[in-house]
Image (tube, rainbow, N blue to C red):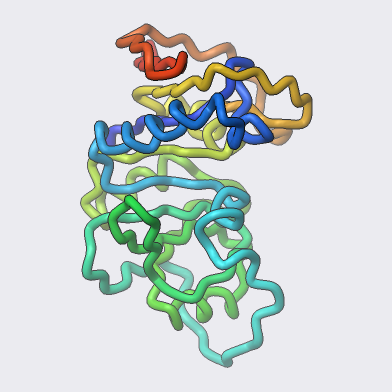
Length: 237
């Protein structure tokens, strides 16, 4: 299947963590600022986030119990009307996230239309809930996320040619599992966390089979202000 170009752009500590206390440490401020600035380098039309990342920083938390609307819609993809061609793609297999709008507006970022990514396990009430806000949605698997199908639909239905993966680690790992990542961009802060409960840029879910390590070739290594480092890799295929 055809797919967009995929870059995984992550902010990490020196020991590879992508969450935890290091993110707000004063020594990490310059690198984190540059991480945000470098998003513009790639000119992606869509950014893909996992459920937990969305709940913590983009959606309105968790939806909770959704009252029945009595409406019924076919279980097929829905491309809602949108006045922008910039998207935040929310991977939400069970339909758990809460919303108050079809758009997300973050300081320093362009206004983005929400695309919810669902599996067949989602409830009828949640589909009606998304329709009520004018949120686009895609079905990409029966019980598990089909990453290749998701990318194909983003390209074919929305005209998206370049996608950014930005966490969490298990979602990134799902795309890596299927060899769908073209480039990895790591902005490394000059701090060490040591937290054994934090996740890394790529984690493999227990339900996924073992695979051999993915190999990459270095494209660029650039020192940043205050000791940070930007590394760019392309996957060897």
